[in-house]
Image 1 (tube, rainbow, N blue to C red):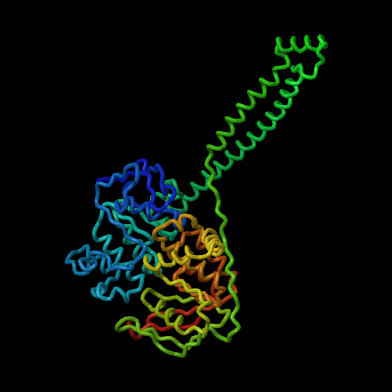
Image 2 (image 1 turned 30 degrees about the vertical axis):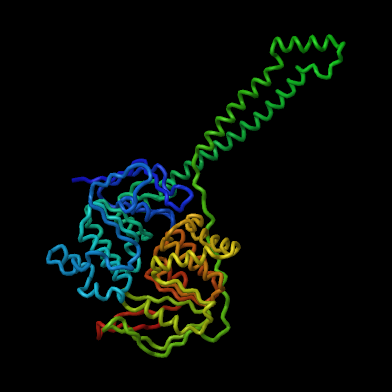
Length: 502
């Protein structure tokens, strides 16, 4: 049976906001996947929560007479139903467990799981429940290539109404039959994956821009003509006025009276009235053409240069990864201008290594900028409060950076809880003010929209300080790094991972 989800004239506003986030939006969603596209903080997650009934509209109606499930970006908590899935005695559960590589002990050791493992478990539970409407926020964050392909295959098997927020272009193109562009206070749906939908949107915007330019030129031309006719009308008024005539100038007064009767000299005034009406009409038409304003994007990171010989020196050693696994590494050195990529599969200990490096840094804390892989909701709120307490000048500088990474500062400051992407931008912006000697980012492109990723690449490429990046985004790493610390599983032991410097 074909299912539908309809948004009918929906308006929604957060209580702390000064204006509606969405106003009078209409959407029609059928079975299959719809990509949800927009800048960080634009309202993508809010749209998903409205679709699944976690938020209620202030006006309008959403048809939701179906089972719904929302899969959040964050993986802080064990998903409800994970234990039921892991110990279910059914074919569907067994297929998902094998496909996603889930283990029986994941509920007990949730705190020690990598974020990629947590994300696989979260999606496994969602698919096992088989809701009519499934909304997933950034399903491929934290995942290596193999895990991304597994998740994509699992999502393709879903037969309900799917809403997908992602910056993964490949996933959006392969999975989605339409894309919804979120640009408050409205939304626009266009058919196809991200490539086809964006091309359609760009073509439409180019057409609207051309119409706007043509109408603008026409208005300017009409205004020039109106100005010319007004000058003629003013001249006619002077000719029809008896001011300045001598009291005994009977001939002059008679001539003016004849002009008034015939209306000969009143033609200029009539022509001016006509053109003025046309100008006003054309101006209203011009103002009715909606042009998307382009944000100024791009930032420069003012990193400073450390004069120390090295920022980190770790002798050969190993780190425990949970109860049985270990990460073995050789002697590691980070110099003041090194740009290092840390790569490896999920669960190989990349984040554990980063935490170990942070504890061994030969750098004043004030000159270290660290953006972790995940920032939980409580810490996100603390970071936002820290920003709000800054002096006006500092806050203005901070918000300029956030704006140039593609977010709307006023929405960020008004929010009760910033989105994960906005939190990362905010944390990076705060770190920029400290003139960092080293920037360490764990999965920097997670939660960020596509324009923001490009801006981040440009900013980090110009930064003179040391750089350590953990990422599965190979293109991002190739652009920014020169050294690779590659972590791989030992061929002799499945519980041992080894790091090699490439």
